[in-house]
Picture: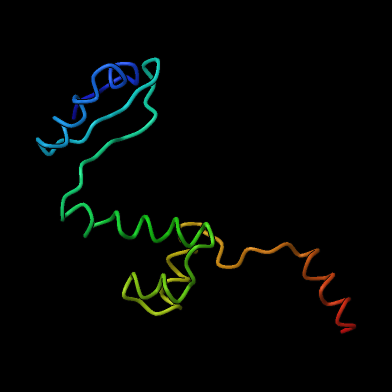
Length: 108
C-alpha cells in the first residue's frame, strides 16, 4: 500500500495511475489524516465486493428495489432483508407522521 496526500495527487495525478497499474491500493490523506482508499479495477475486486457495495448504496439511496437487490445478490428477498438488518440498512424509509396522515386522510 502506498500513501498519497491530496496535494501530491493534485500536482502529480500519475502517482495514482502508477499505483493502479501495479495492482496496489492507495491510502489518500489530507493533512496526514486518512480520508479514503483508492483502488484500481480488476475482475476480482468487482466480483468479490464492489458490485455488492454499489448495489447496497443504490438500495440505500432509493435507486434500487428490494427485488433488484435480491437478484444482484443471488438471494431471496427474505435473505437480503436479513443482510440489510445485519448492516443496519433500513428496508423501508418513511416517517410515521406521514403514515398517520395518510391513514387519517383515508378515514381508517
